[in-house]
Length: 71
Image (cartoon, rainbow, N blue to C red; front, side):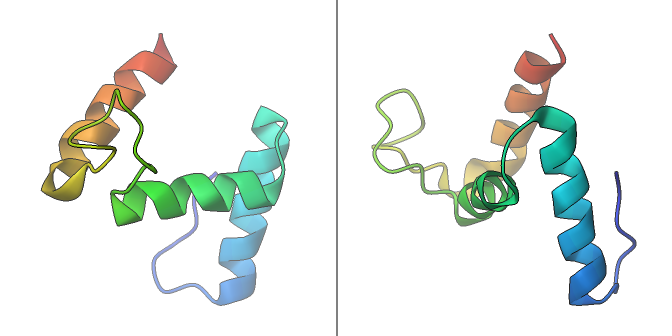
């Protein structure tokens, strides 16, 4: 479910749709998760970083999330 670097917007959109279909959510939800990870701001979630901010620890967050999601 990858999309090669430099692809056009439509190819990226299709990749997001494939991810959404694979996990049973809407493309909006998938895009929102990518946006939240990229922004590092999780709306004051008490369990993440400082007041919901991941900040410069994005790589560590993605690594930890992957471990949880992979089981």
